[in-house]
Image (cartoon, rainbow, N blue to C red; front, top):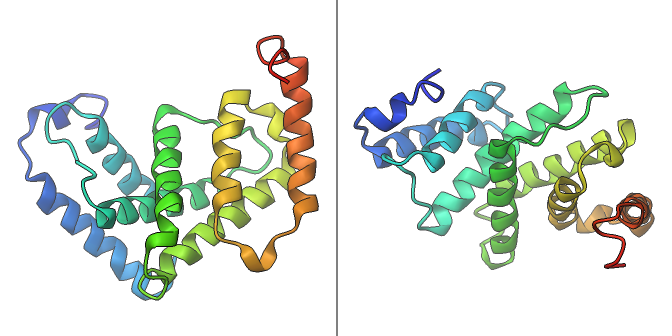
Length: 189
């Protein structure tokens, strides 16, 4: 409601303090190795603070990127486990969350793996959630431009011990078939 009524633009907030409170809240769950169930609201608020004109969260450090990536991963895990056979609706906020997660995945090889074990486990859970979703629903039900973003995150998630190329082959075969049949993309292939 705060987001829709544009109150976040009007209220003066110490965004760094709010970010610290949210991260402390999130880290309480991380230490207990539990997935916070109400992260959806927190993720929406964090996403809103990335988009507002004032009180904007600046992702100016790896630490902020990792924390946002963790929050957004948990949010998407919860979302993917709730949807049964419906289509994955990629809203502007979910798209932004996937971009943050993707940037986190790019930064992952440079990080101390021992320090960020829980983040890696969240990202692995996200991969497994996408995997379960792909088993229930066809990725072809999602627009092509969204398929590419989802598949980038799906493939980049840290799962070296579970890697099965045949699993990816089937998904990419469907994507390439839909790209070929789409007049906008067929001349590229």
